[in-house]
Length: 439
Ligand code: GUN
Ligand code: ZN
Image (cartoon, rainbow, N blue to C red; front, side):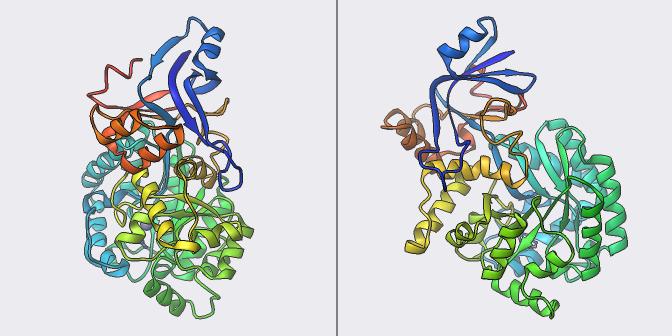
């Protein structure tokens, strides 16, 4: 049994519908056994329950639930920084040539290691990962993910038109390779499988139907794809599916949309699409850094919330600008500010929720992770800024915990991540902070 002593914060309730949803425990403790939280409260209260439990002393920083990134591309870690293009040109020039290199499993393994290390170093404990077009690159990815201990929901990306010929499959192959990968990996350790058509632009009806067949056959697999990201992309999709009502329609017709579906972007939705998404209870991964970098547009969060569509956050590496969910939260805040009256105010408790609990909900993993309620897994990130940095200074002078959390989203980076745990296992430990993170 281990007792983690720390000031911790979390959002077990939804701050978009519940006032004062930020829970703060100063000098608190979480008692953890076999990776699960057994008790939580002040250090004094919890200590008496188990006076002999080993104590990990995390005073001096803030402990948060591990971040949950609901949209991030594994094969794109080496092409971060491709600025100056919109989506379709960026795919063609910056991204798809690199994705083709993952046909070599040794190359794919090196990329997988870089990718997974970056997730952990940024405090991300669970990720919905857009995979590679190659089944062999997914095998090496899942092998590496299993070694890290991170919670990973991922799948082979499939497309059968308009990319590059070497990235194209057929409906028959997509089904057969997907089935084999699901049978090998879904539910192994902390891995879950996500059926992943790249986007309707690169998918025939037959390919979407093959994805639908996998969804129908395998209980519990997730679905992820892109939708309504860029006006030129939307126009192309509507031309490719002339009888479709909108971008969502081909996905719905193939049986892809439900409670365990997460669609990235949705910057340009119609009212019909938002109503249908709410009815299907699917989630949207909002990726504000990507939306800004690719000039995709300002995400209509208010319309999503008013329609009852669940929204979480994603970094969208490499359309986005890196792995930090703190930066992603700040960018979400900026973009809602820029929308003026049409925007939604994103106070620090909403940013924390979007980066943690909302992601767990989107992935239907909220019974397991996303906050520090008793019974949940101990998935956590310990933030402790180096002395004298602007965040350290802001924390020393923060008038309230809310102000400290706002300063974290404003100033925090990977350099402030001192330790990361999944189910009580350390998956990242900063070198310089080794004295602080004792276990
Ligand atoms: N749409 C289709 N593929 C991609 C991708 O790799 N990144 C983004 N942002 N949008 C996409
Ligand atoms: Zn994406």
